[in-house]
Length: 218
Image (cartoon, rainbow, N blue to C red):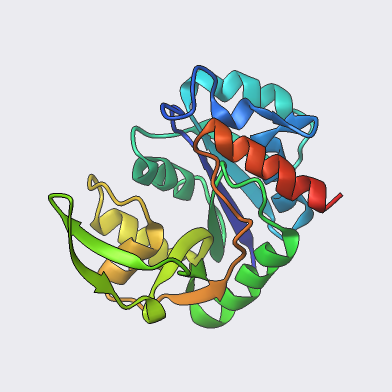
């Protein structure tokens, strides 16, 4: 079975600051390099990075010696970026991962690969631990039962023809979650238990948290 991985890197990092967060240095290398290095070590056969045009040249330099990596231009939305990536895939199964999640592990990637072969569509998730409130106009309407609630992470992994069918059906919409597209298609999606350390870098504060987590693994 051929496995491809799509790494989304098309965002503008508007909430991060003046620098694209994927080029921020943590422990001596860029955020995007931490992420891609994990997939390089995995059993994925090809890694497609869907990059913002403004940083494509940076990525080409960073990954110039990587045999598995192909860098393409991302879209205006995450959904468009993933669709661009899918059109460059040649595989049976595909993993889709946020470039801004550098704390992913090889073990978790391999768990997704093994799980998707049995279940066709899986998403890494963590159990919700906070108490969740529904609020309207600053007023708490109700407390939501968290016993069935999970937080979505990536990677998400799919049989290629299923996720491609979903993207073609919902083209032009604004899904931020590929599993949600597959659910809307009427297909079952199963969970893979993730890690609370698998954070997404969004703000400068997340860089500090990532540094702490990485230092624990040294």
